[in-house]
Length: 46
Length: 357
Image 1: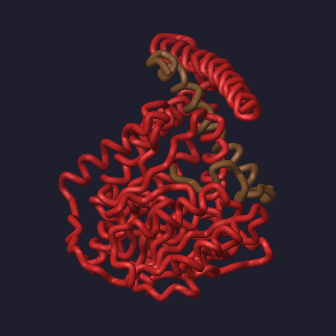
Image 2 (image 1 turned 180 degrees about the horizontal axis):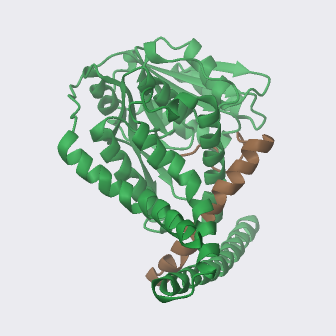
């Protein structure tokens, strides 16, 4: 991956990770997400 | 009013991502608490919870027996949570040869309950938790347990390295974010404790373990924070390493992040004492690092909306920057989608090639 592409992905990744906060709240309140099988269920970034 | 909303949002975002790291740098300079490591060999129980891990189980167990630690002091426990993909047979075959303790549940109970079952059969003075996918460095156990020579330490988190396809540390956006995160953890650890460990590699003193509630999402935050609330430290030791492959696209990282963040909401609901300054010795770190991350997206929305009503001077510059930023985010989305399609096409070609052979 070129440096230009890597840089271009930074704003997208940042925005997506912030959207994950909203999605996380939704799943927490609804409580129906299967977290064992979710991709990356073995989390490493906190 | 609009200006107050703008500045509150702006300062909140700036503090979480820049002000807090700067605060930690200054804080660490004046209040560093070094850990007195001493190499020793207490008995260790290494616990791995698995559901459907057929593709990782064998490599993980082999990795456990390649560690530089006396075999008679290392108990390997695999806690199986109703696997349906053949993981059980694979683990039991291996266990018969190498002496792995297997705990099996025929009913799906979740990771937290699986860890509780694993701990119930553990005999070690130190409990070491790991996930199935990541591989430990040979010296990881030795480095982790050396920290328990310091009586103030109750939990030690190792360092997880995210590697790219060339097995170098990932340098994409996800890798950069992870390095930033590890920098924060190192500083928090030097001051007192980290507000959460790496699920892939962390160890605790046996006597400090409190069984998890079955619905717990983030065992690697709940366990260390319970220890911190009891007055011990939860530290980060970069000398104890585990390795994983970085998510190749942001969408996979998004799925993982969603889970983690849902776990953070659950954490505050389960442990409200974390938000009480006189109960939590790392209250500032908890609010700045964990709670702050939950507030930032809301601040980004209010910042943008407030900015639409402030179209002059400095505010106009900030608005232009925001529009450019989100424009680049859309471009990044399109780029990521194209890369995803390209990866699928490459896989299809590879898959067809294999079938022809």
